[in-house]
Image: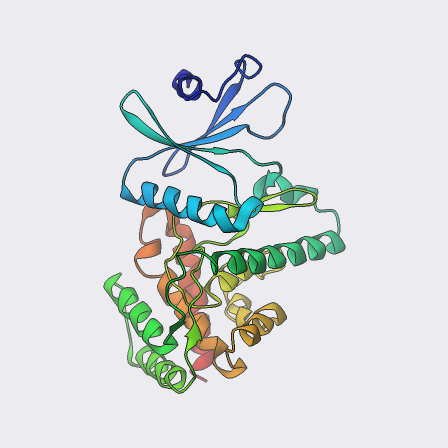
Amino acid sequence: MLFIKQLLSSSGLLDSKKADCSIACISTSRPIYLAFDQKSDYPMYVVRKIDGAPALKSHNIHTQIYKHAGILVPQPLGLYTYAGEEYDIQHGVRGLPWFQLKSRLRSEEERTQLESRIWETLKSFQAAISQTEINKSSNLKPHEELRNAYEGYQKAGENLNSSFQAIVEKAIIELSQEPGSPAVPQHGDFCLNNLIIDSDHITVIDFEDFGITSMPLYDHFTLALSLPSSPTDPVNSADIFTTPPIIAAGQVFGISKDVVCWHFLHHLLLRLGPWSTGEKRKPYRAWLKKVLNCFLTEQDK
């Protein structure tokens, strides 16, 4: 990974004190390169190759968000070219990803405190993005959003039955009778895996799915389903919309407690559309299908 050092050097980001940095690579669908100096346990820089329009869009959104969110997100340094390829470089942040942190939670109290901090981070993040140019629409119609998600689910090749269709139509009718909801651009994958957690600060990362919807509560459901306190069995996970943080967030957005369940149905259908059809998300998709089936069974009673 010598080319990453050469990229950083040619970009003027490596001075004599940082020249001995080490490089690590996180192998994902788009490799992430981390540059560490010899005195720090968190990366100086995070580097990603711009390998197409989605990656460039993610960089541009990140840059816009940083103007309003500040340290809630990593500081973007810009786009740099090396050997004919373009790279997105940002400052690294202090803290640990969830997979390294979870073994350090020693008590129920520590877990509860951490979850409380994460909910506050989501609240702050959405308040920040509501001030950006990304938030161009003030209202949306939840029943239309649900219908669109249902159509996306169908296009993903899922089998349907009359009972399922009847529940969706009932949900659409009930949502159509509610007032419009505020349009709140969603991170798209606001889960534990996309947070860097330090003792006194949490940083939000990964904006590749940003704007997948502006339906309020979408990020709340994603987060709730990923938290340590969330049940892993599909039966109880299908009831996540009844938990206090979700109900409280719904009240903030003016969403009636009676229709929060239909917002959750929208969440499941949207995530079971094209978003999760790739090989990378196959295990998560299989679990979400079980959650959806449990949800539908309960609603069909």
